[in-house]
Image (cartoon, rainbow, N blue to C red):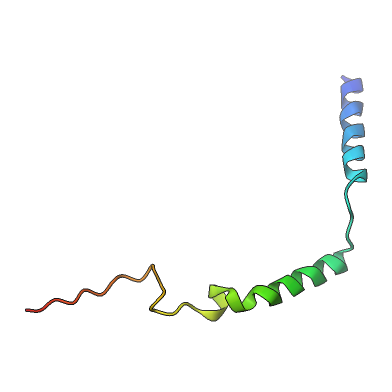
Length: 64
């Protein structure tokens, strides 16, 4: 059982060694830049106009 456990740890180390590592400050800067780029298209930030809101109930006009 110890041999298979050591093999699993070795495989994990090889996988991690092949990953590209990024500094936290660089990742945060990239994330901030991405958020600023898509902010103008984000409905939570800009709101949804009533004419394009598909979740708003349709108004029914009826004559009596």
